[in-house]
Every structure is written in structure tokens, then in C-alpha cells.
Length: 144
Length: 79
Image (cartoon, rainbow over all chains, first blue to last red; front, top):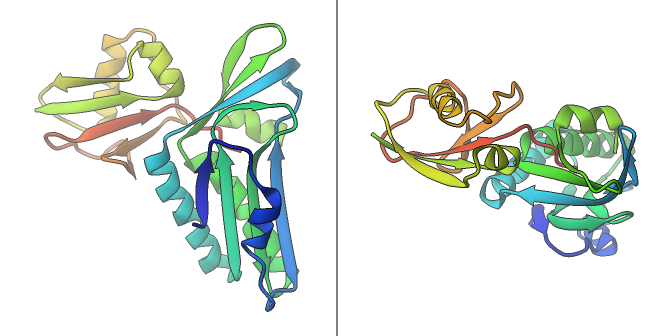
């Protein structure tokens, strides 16, 4: 499956292996990690809510678009759901291609689209005890 | 006509419910949201909110038909 949602830790090595291809000279991997701060708040945990029926459909569509636009050979994306601790991998995108330009472009395209199109929401739990839903504009500004 | 409405994340917390079925004269997804915002005073209109109908992403101007299931998605934040 090219796009999937997981409620357990993402196996980074297995995701990379899924795009291994002897015809490819380039592999680009993006890992989104849970970091310890956002907008001046100390983050303790992060919770992802995913509406799978639409997320899986749209996620697969995004990867198909990347194949079409950039002509890459292989691409997978896995997104976590549930409660995550600092340092955990929240999302991974792996793209392989004969040459690096297409792999970089496709990887960037996939993560950017995943952030804005899929029904996935994150709630940050702060050290202060407060919890807050994070909006897309905020995460785009903060990077990650 | 009857329409099932489902709320997610922030919208679920604002309305205090996961879903409800309403009987109304019909209209677009945007009109339905507006009506629900009048019913649930905490439900905020978000420019970046998305809508899906019967598990397919859709547009706010889509006119609903009887027995559609409408999903209101607050601004998303994957990654």
C-alpha cells in the first residue's frame, strides 16, 4: 500500500526497503518528528486524530499525482495516529527515482499535500497541562 | 430531507457531539454548516475548514441530496 495510517511505531527501515529499486540511483526520505516546543509552548505529547476512510483515499491520490507530475519510480507515505511521545516519527515519505531531482521534488510535494489535504488533526499536550488543537497555518509556519 | 452530519476534532468538541441527523429543507454544504453554527453557538466558521460528502472530499457549494452523510473537517494539520 503506497499510503497508510499506522497506530504503532513506524518502521523506517521497512519503509525505505519498500521503495528499493535497482533502477533507481536516488532515495529521498522525509521524517516528521515530534518536537518538544511549538509557538513558545513546551510540548509533552502529541495526539493525532485521523479519519481513515478519506485520509487513505486522498493519501493514495496524492502519491498517484506525484508519480504523474515527477515521473518517480516508487513512493510510500505512512502517517501515525494516536498518542505520540517526543522524538517519535509522526510521518515518513520515501521516494526513489533514477535521478535525485525528481525524488526531491516528489517527496516535497507529497509531504506538503499531506499536511493540507488529509483529514488529520493534531492536539498538542503541553507541559503546562493545557492541550490545544493545532491548525495547519501554524504547522506550516513552524516547519516540521 | 434527512442529512447525517459528522463532526471531527475541534468541531466535535465545539458541538459536543460526534454526529447528528437533521431534517431540513435542503441546500448546499455551506448552508448546512451555517445552520449548524446557528444551532451550536460554539461552532466556529473556519476559512480553512473542509467538507466531505459520503467519504469523498467535496466543495462547500455542493448541493446535498437526501440521505447524504456530510463530514465537517476543521482545519487539518497532518505531518
